[in-house]
Amino acid sequence: MENIIEAKNVTKKFSLGGIIKKKYVTAVEDFYFGMKEGTQKVVTLAGESGSGKTTIANLLLGFIRPTYGEIRYRGKDIWKLKGSEWRKYRREVQAVFQDPYESLNPFYKIDNVLLEPIRKFKLAKSKNEAVKLASEALYDVGLDASEILGKYPHQLSGGQRQRAMLARVFALRPEILLADEPVSMIDVSLRADILRIIQKLEKEFELSCLYITHDLSNAYCISDEIIILYLGSVMEQGNFETIINNPKHPYVKMLISAVPQPDPKNRWKGRVELQDIEIARLETIVGCKFCNRCPEAMPICSQKRPPWIDLEDRKIACHLYA
Image 1 (cartoon, rainbow, N blue to C red):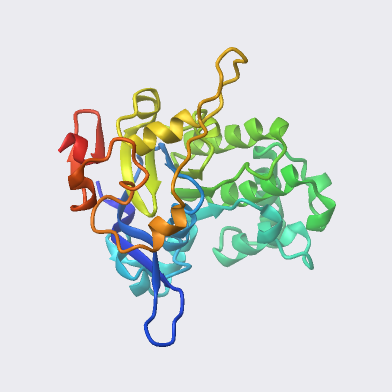
Image 2 (cartoon, one colour):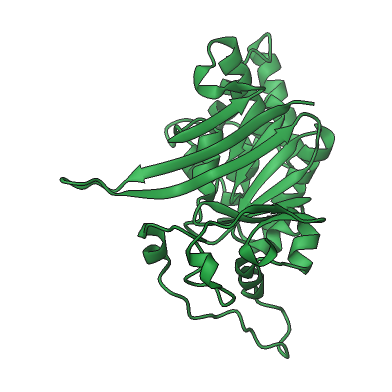
């Protein structure tokens, strides 16, 4: 079974300028990811701020080009897609972003974000049929079309705007959903509802989801697998519960220990004094990117990049397991 979408050895560097000698920051390095057709699962892409999560989403969506490597759709480089192939890719790979208001044009009514893609992808034969399809999609995410259609984005709450963006996804019936921090700007009381809608999408339409977040507690509710990034490189990946309950990479251990526990008797020990991450990002790193912050670092860690190791229940990039 082929991958619908695949990132193959992708690296993305951004220029920091410089007159005599240009400097670059590596946002993503040698990243691989694949989603097979009909897998019906949620994969979480996690890491602290600045780890390259949103850059990966932008690469997969074709918003930016990789410096090296390829983003492939059904085996073909997306930057070589044309005509009907490009339209099919745009329909089958959809996204929901952190701030729904930024995804909406304040000069257009909410109808536009629902009806325009239906028209563009020729999913309805008439305007009445398009409105019916949009209304059904709104119902699927718990919204009443009579209360939503005809209104401008500023007339809706944050939760309603995010549901409307998910309704757009429902209407298009995609194969892959890229959800980039979809609940971080939503009231806590509504976050569970948004996550349930994503689960509903996954189950009803056999959709796979790449769920991008820095909040592991939210991801715990819906995820099957997890990929943990540090400075654009994968540190550990595998089954979500296996890694969360028994992390092996020093960075992953530190990341999970930083999640506060809702127990007043269990004092939070997540605060760890670390070297400046920006220094680590800009240095020419020969060995492990985490070695100057790692409590378990060995001499080889600063001399050689750790190999990608297949353990029985996960993959990990760490000299401790080489």
